[in-house]
Length: 470
Image (cartoon, rainbow, N blue to C red; front, side, top):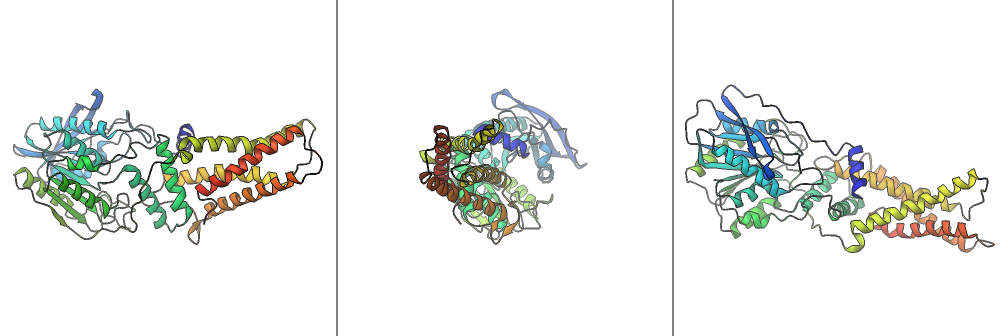
């Protein structure tokens, strides 16, 4: 099943090849830049740039920026943040994210945290940077990585998190894609069952990295001051639920030096957005860089605020949903076995007919409805899997379910109609075979038996995936 998913991901352009090493960024004249290299996890050499205010004095704070999700993300992706933070008096290190050991289906937050610690060590060694005032900033996925690094090392003086998620990656992702589908106007079994179950199967098959990672214990182990920032229009991290989890975990760990702020009209990365979080503009939310600069100055001067929350209430139209590991009968292994059975049962029926015709041994079928089982079953399984995979993998923020009829995607409705046809045809074929006049030869019995076995298994399978439900 994993090879099938990977092949489809490549065909759909969803599995990117590792990016080439990023060139040094262009730096505004009011800042200086220094190229650095440092060892990450496993000795992998990573490359970055340290931005500092031109003419800055000694003993200034420093901050390492940790990327969100993405393979080999270049340092320039965070250039806007780095420039603004450096203009607030800090030295800021941005670096190219690893592609080795990191992909759509493989990653380790622990490994990424060690990469970040390598960056922290490199920044602490820079001339003019006070090593006691170096902190870490994490965006999105970096919101899982930065706390791990902070919990491991007292060399980190503070933690800034943007769009961070306090729940497991699998729960966050299923919520984001479902929310994107609902935002596109979709409801029903595609959102309630199919999307949810696909992610469970992917995780069970080892194709969703660190699906059940629980960040709460690590957050509770963070002793440094924490600044948490969320945009009110975050469509990738549940902005109402996550801050509550962070606050509770920090309180449980005895760390009350936290400041949470929500920025109006801002997206997942605290950038301005003109359309409720779908489009990210280059500009940061007004006041975002100032807040970070002021907060870092205060905490590095020993004036960390205590348990403060400010800003407008975030927008979250639906709550997250628990994503439990699948039972044995819905596991990736059983799902793969069902796909193999469908391929054999539904494809074998017409294949045998073609061979017979080529040999001049064609005969009338026991029931013409058998063609509906074969064609309908194949179309529903292959078409349903391809459509669901493409919708889920391109979902989040703004899903692309295709044209809608009411609140149902037309393609999904067509697949449901084909599934119903396959089920009805299975019943008709079974009845026709039972009522057949005269004996049915052994080869035809095997052919029909395999077809009806596939049709019988197809019924619970289609119910599980929502193809037979509204």
